[in-house]
Image 1 (cartoon, rainbow, N blue to C red):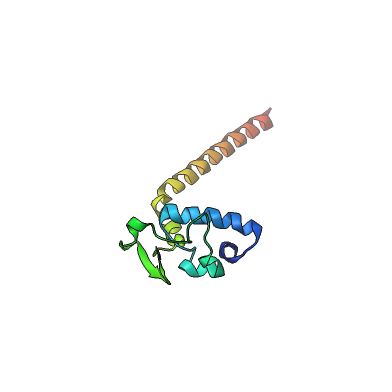
Image 2: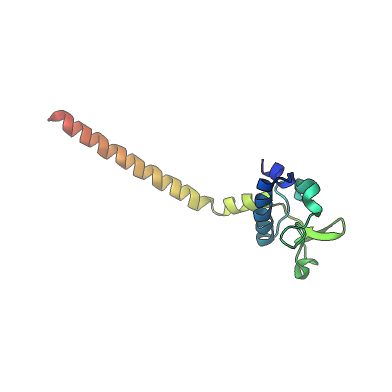
Length: 121
């Protein structure tokens, strides 16, 4: 659905495209799964005064950028960036999940003990 939103030209999609363009610039990536092909016909339409996926001038000669048509774009796809972020923070995510599970189990134990005490009376 996100790739379809990148390729669409509706008003609702424009908002998503602008936010995704900002995400691409911040994380130095291009496209969601398949690089510039994810943008479809919208790739050549500038968003926010800047071409889509275009590398900044100081980064254009680094391995972060690659040539595509006539411009330098970011080489890494944003899907890879998202997966990498989740892998880097997986321990924290698992810790929070297990912490919440323990709190729920303790709540169940207390509610069962309260239920049993009420049954006795």
